[in-house]
View 1 (cartoon, chains in turn blue, red):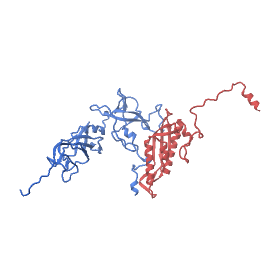
View 2: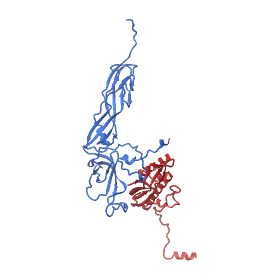
View 3: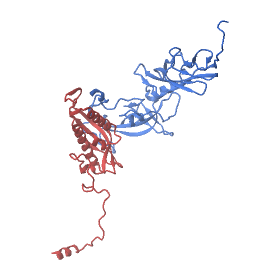
Length: 288
Length: 180
């Protein structure tokens, strides 16, 4: 079928595609401002205003994934660590800058702009400036995915309780059913530097430790009899079963579009202890 | 007659006993370089000079290749002469996916209205160019224009490009193309 092979590319072609302004993952355009640094630690700082002198450049702060893998989108963020400071937003960026047309002569190292270019307009290539941690607090950017993830890890996520059937004691040869009836979705609204961030946490994976050395990994929370999906056979003995839940989530800033939280966290629920007994056949007289 | 010439040479100056030094930046010739590019649109020798003029000639050639790629729906040479260039990769992917779907292009030819550059720094040249793409229509496999893929003329003034010199092929390579 023809439509099965239709290209999964944007509805534009060639130069008709708008320039790559679809910033994501915490990238920032800094059209008026400056990047200063590096400091003694090798870090830079983004400022809303140019301190002194003519404005020579417009700036762009992009995540490494945006630079390395813009076309294919398979890049996994992370791997770079920046200093964490209370109340500061410090993020790892590829810093690029584009020249602005100057009144009169251009800087010596700059290629000349087109003759019809207006003074102050951007021209030429986005030139590499630095790849480093940049303090962008002064720009008051919306929370980045990484910043939201740091909050996500501190949320009071539910600790899902392990439930088992039959309740109380179980029998050898009769599989024990596991499930949890605790909530597997929870919505939080948090304030991050004045931005209202709604985080929807969802349990994405369940690790059931059965107590006999087995761990069952599932993507559903199980269900009680007769709809059970998670069962385990035991030998006689006393066991303590537990549940570790992996949480993922999405977030939106000030009611905007939802985006994935770039990471997961786990919670451990209260364990359940039960005894599995060996049932033995006993002959009885039905007429007794 | 030969005697007369020798007499003339020997008057006043001493002959060199060694050959003149050969400059390491001597311009390559078509005799020493493997041809690059499609047979019907080979890369001009001018574009294979490691100089500012060579980089500009290469960039003009790349735009010609882009026009040709849209006409033939073959982006292999665009791919060959670009590296780590996001805009190039996007354009190449568009052509290849459209070709695989049976689409073709009508129009979309590129003309260069302005081109200048910085001198060669190391092996890199920073170029500024203003280009124009003629109206472009994507045609489906039945020969019909696709309504959502009809585009007006597009001009881009003051776009930028970074080019790097490839020692192995004696050619420039487009490393970055930022369309304003």
